[in-house]
Length: 637
Image (cartoon, rainbow, N blue to C red):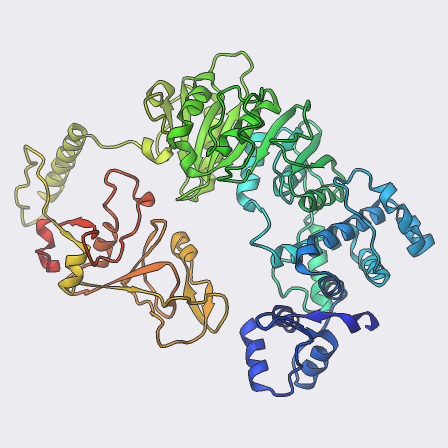
């Protein structure tokens, strides 16, 4: 433990090592005068000496053990500031790649063999200096690798780095990445990601092809003890056992504008033994893989970039379907991906939901449809992103229909729908997955939003369906002792009387509440319902401290998010989180489920999942809600 003398830890590190929450560490600092004093950091994020923390925890009967993995990680965090931590993780990765490729060199020559690292890892991208000057750290990493293996060690360290920088790292959701790889690159071959970030999509392709796969710890506390650390590394090794599908050999290619992330990606795929070429640079302006054609392209590009090279790339030959407007950088990425895949090859690319309908991009969308390049648009979740599936034209007859899927976060329906469409693009599909005639899409808007193309009940169809249902109802109810009153369909459509949310509030039927300003939902003993929880229908995941100003949710409350999600609360015990609006109804006069059906009618005729929630109904902006005759029991006018 001599190497730990210079190591510092923050409150989050202490919580993880001691197996408690951050709030417990804050309480220790307030209640115990002998708690170690900070030795660095800032007032909001102090740093403490690890040996002093270890002594204090043991003296106060707290369970505490520093595993070798934690020792390595904390030494790395202490060695550099957070802005350079990624570079250090990448340099450690290069050393681990050296250990994997030439284990005998380190075993026989120790630190003297470090001069050979650069020569053994020439396939790593960028121009960064890969030397490690901290020889104590090098020895600790080598010891850890000898016990668990270079791949498992690097994924452990990368997992800790990703956890500490989760808001800065471009990481695609694992389930979405796996879906994209299965749809576009299931047959192997050369797979390209021109905006590879930290390699999530490429690792998915490597995993599908049977390359070894290791995972970072599932939980931040899993490495609190040596025994737990061993369990983590053992589980990571088990994850390596994957079976390759029958198909071509998989070769990975990727480019990333951030040199550190490119280096991290390269280390991750090369440690798995994959054949890969990763380069650093801007794919749109400086294509480092120009001239290469992939069998499949998967891409999660940056969204809403206005400085992507519109002026200098105006005459670029990649713009086969039209020059992308300045504000449509995503359409530049779509055409770049098509230009880098072989004829007949598939492209799976994530797009913002608005890219399916924004007016400046309608010309390019139309050209993609006419050429048969755009094959499917899939809404993965309310508010996006969308998944676009494309196929580079190869001279064959283009399909006459586009597949549109509204998955509503149920990704299991996407792959069967895509397989059915590929088998017969002209077949009719129904439900959440359906085909739309391309000629019907080529109007003044070229709006490809899946929710817009759901089947809608027309007036005549609705009348026929209602009449049929009424006939069946009468036939069934005739068996009852009491006959039902006569129900006749109206000859003409009639407008329903309406009221506003503001009027409901004034009448005392609802109370509108919001969380306190500057409320924190990061730590504390009290659960908090967040906007993400509301949208996903998940239990409260936030935490906060007790405060009299908090709004506590109750069963029957209606909660809305800023992106249009609506939820009726069924359990109490949590606080209302930031950026949420709560509507508390009088249950004797108004049904909360009824109110939840009309949270935002300012944009009639659209998919309810896309509607904005009600604003505070205190003025002329109050939303109108229909009132039916049966609503008299709710006390509505």
